Length: 401
Image 1: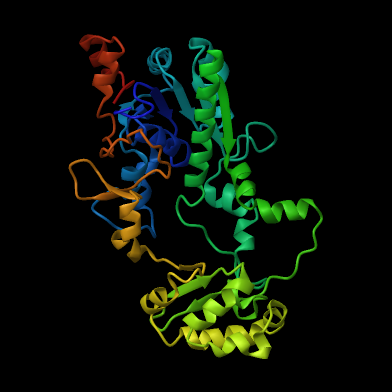
Image 2 (image 1 turned 135 degrees about the horizontal axis):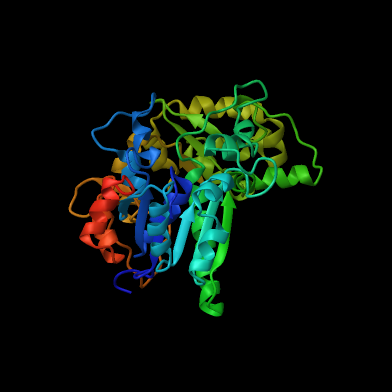
């Protein structure tokens, strides 16, 4: 599979912003031919994300580079009959159609499942919404910040304590895991097609994925569990599953769930072998009973050395811990580079973020820079059988851009 598992698979990305288009990006990484369908003029509004207040400033459209790599852009006005006719012609030869238009918008534009599916019995029609396809909120617009992060309880659950202001999400934080859910649905439907020869309607939404992400505690609530009040870090119930600030201001987090076995190793790494025999901390029950005291002691210890020193001291001792990373770490992260988490664009020194799936024996495409708006309109229409005169006429009437 030199050109990827999905070499020859034709995908129509008729969606905007992140979650649904990112599912198409993952398909493209594995070799699929993806056509990005955008409205003429401004195109996908996601192109403008870095220009919004508060976003990092750059000479590069970093958001578009990530989500639209490998794709070809067709600027197409679906509000016009001739625009829909072009789409319908493309659908007849496609394998996957992806949209995140709300149901009412799909109906207005003539791109519902009932409109599209009869054109191609093998087509996988994948739709993504904020709050699902039915019910009072089916047509309600949503981003991951509200439909995934806030609605699911995650926004509330990550607060340091009951009195802390709810935490804001960051751009795409929920969209990217949701993209993997939609991608998995598409791949499952493709497998079904291999067995039956028939296409399917694949559905997913932000709200469902958000509750899935908070599933452990959400299931506890569904079971009627009794919850304890949320406690600030300094009053956590377990000192060895807590986070600590180092001398240089950086943080690390301990996650010692096999505490009885790991406690002696931690004590030695901290230079406090006396903890092993200290009767205050002899057993797990003792340590939990004195968690506030132990957290205060750990705060003092971790404040004596920089993060890099603590990483060197803790690594290789069977202890589960992690660096509380910052964005400045990522470009120099050796482990990410060695595992192809960060890879260069073709012919460029600029790195991008790989999709998080690898399959032995199947190559992934080296990322190609994203298209400009309508960059491939003429090429794609010629491939669809349109003549040069027809293309000029369609451009003249604003159907394509």
